[in-house]
Length: 114
Length: 345
Image (cartoon, rainbow over all chains, first blue to last red):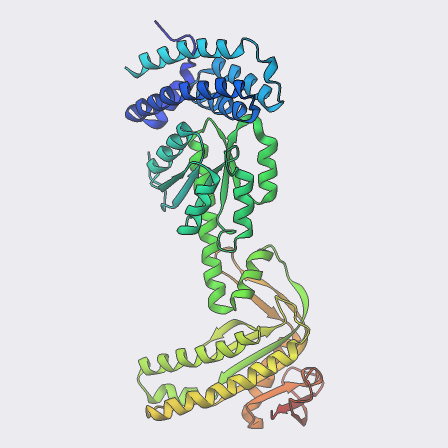
């Protein structure tokens, strides 16, 4: 089944640039770091630390864009902006959506890796 | 991928591991040696510890962000010439602009485009190499302060009028010496001689901008303006003559030839600027004043005095430097005779 969340043009470019071996390492790094970033976002909500939230969302946005996970990156960007504007109370269900979407992206990346 | 023409020592600063890996991998593939720092504080420690040719710097980082690193680098005299390429998300261009205004060399947006990465890194490294080369060239001809000033003012300087003092110095009986001894001994003599003369000139803020055979030309009061450039030139000339006494004593002890020099000095308006090409440029002064200094230097042979100066230079000397009027001399190519003075001390 072809990926639905990964833009394959971006992904192929990245693969070409980094080589088949290295993209595996890069995917592993992304999959290792992303859950930690989500964890940081969640914990910063409980401590009401908008700066920590913003930075985690910023990294999430950047890393997702690197692999062509554009919808996920856009969602992370929305969260980054809310953090920047100190509007953590307006996040609503966005963090849950992000986690859910990340689940799909992670699965697709793992498949591409194999 | 093709390796870069000349590899550089690069520092990648980014708090994001994926970005660090990606950048390091891309740069290593291009043949560069890459070190990694995960925030600004670590980066500053690394920069102060060993030299880097280029820094790729993220803006958004914990502890010490890209702005703070850039500012700290610009304030550090050992680091302010190290080029910095900002790496940032495409939606933070306003912050990148601020970094460029502060002094960053260039920028790259993430996700990175490998072709742009290669082009910008190579361009920055090339500029750095050129700057290092020029600085090295200047340091052989000028004091570190002058070299620094030249680097800061840049190479776009066209010609301009400056009020300065020109000095010409030549070894008098050099030709006979050159014919009477081994070539290697002659070159050694020249090197020792120039080292002594350069020291004297540099200690009074002068810049040597020409060396031809056994002769040299120096300028005082340009490119850095100095009110007392006339006095500085004459004091440097006196030191040169003193240094030569020591030099001759050493030569005599080695049973080698001794030398006498002639120094001609004139001051006033001259045209100063860079001549040459981007790759090899020299700071030069030209004009009537410079020609006059050269003629006066040649006249030391006839006058039998080591230091001769023109009237304008003489008028700028303090009382504790004695100069004796030698009357007017009509130089070749000049319509009016010029009053010449011999510096006695």
